[in-house]
Length: 274
Image (spheres, rainbow, N blue to C red):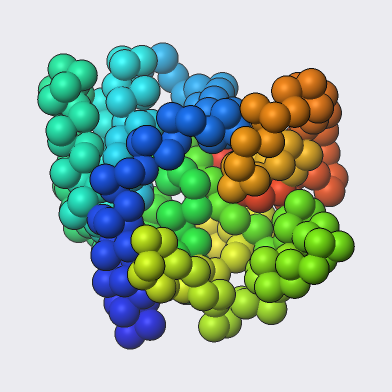
C-alpha cells in the first residue's frame, strides 16, 4: 500500500468512527438519502440471484447489510472504522440478524486477507468508500479471487464531474463547485467530524479500464444527477412537487449519456465470466 493511502486510511477511520455515533440519526431525516439507498438496492437486486453471499466493503453502520440480510442473503460486512463496526454488531443484535451478518475490520487495500471467506456472489461498496483511496486500480485488480464465476461486483462511486456542484459557481461557492476537478493525483481535501483526509474522484471509464479482464459490464447509471445531492438539506421536504418531478426525470434518463456519469455518484455493476 502507498504511504499516502496508509496515512489517509488512519485519518478516514478516525473520522468515520466519530461519525458512527450520529450517522443513522442524520440518515433517518433525509429523504434523498433514502432515495439513494433505494436506488442502489434496486440496482443490486436487478442482477442478483434470490439468495447468496455478499462481501460488503466500507459497510458503515450496517444499514445495507441489515437490508440484504433481511432479504435472505448472508453478508460479511467490513470497514476500516472501529466505531462503524461496533455499530454494525449492535444493530445486528437488535435486529436478530447476527447469524446472517458477520463483521471484520479490514481495509479494501488488503482484500487478499478475505479470500478464505469467499468466494462471494456479490462484492458491494456503497456511497463512495472507494473514493478514499488513491489506489483504486489495485483494489479493482484484487477483486477476481473474491467473486465466484457468475458473481457480481457493484460499486457506488463519486465521479470527477457533478452537474449540481458545478452550478454552485453561480452562487459564488467556487471551492465546492470546483473541488472535484484536477484532483486525480493528489486528491481533494475532505473532512468529517473535524478530521481531514483526502478523496479521489474516478470516472466510469477508469473503473471499466481497471477491472480484471474476466469481468463484463452489467449496468451503469447516474445517481443524484437530476435529483439534487443529499447534502442540499431539506430540498425534498421543502419542495415535494419539484422533487417528485426531478425523480421522474432521473428515473427516465439515469442510464443515458451524459446523465450516467455526471451525478453526485454513479452505480456500476460487473459480472464475472465463467
